[in-house]
Amino acid sequence: MIMQQQFAGLKIWLFASCLLILSATVSADTPETVVKDWTLTDATGTTVNYYSDSRGSVSVILFWATWCPFCRTLMPHLQIIADEFEASKVKFYALNVWEDGDPQKYFRENGYTFRLLLMGDLVAEDYGVPGTPGLFVLDKNHRIVYLRRSGENDDDVEVAVREAIRLALATDQK
Image 1: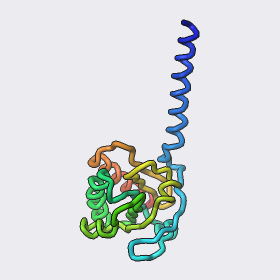
Image 2: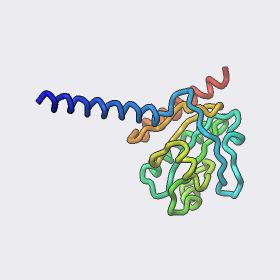
Image 3: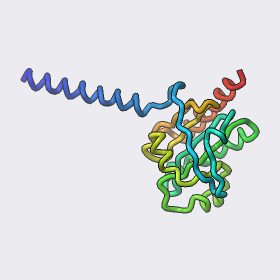
Image 4: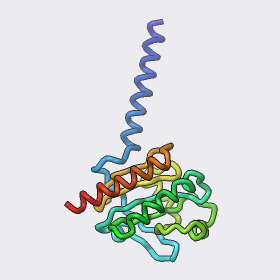
């Protein structure tokens, strides 16, 4: 009986330790975390290098797919924010991933103005994005200031993204 209790306690300790390790590796939203640079082709065929293109700007990076129902509900919220910050130094990038549809047609039909980048699968992998939508807000030094958590409500995400952008812009002004 004592041996079983000790074994059960060990299993709980191991499970908790694994969760702690996983949260440390997945939780890339600390100010010290700088994302990797990438180069992709946009919907017009232009090659975009993220570090060069976003130099001096706050960035919002969305990993999405046309088949993703959560992307479909989140993207209108992001478009509202993009419209609000159109005159600011904020760049919106929509990296299409794991796609089997037509992202360009989807953008046209929905009137999205984010910069559409195609075939972002490897970038999603580099960023540790487990599924769609993956959403990051980055300051001008490419540090993560916001990372969407799985299951977050779209309205809450909209508020959090807007606030992260405002704080990053205010910090950049100092």
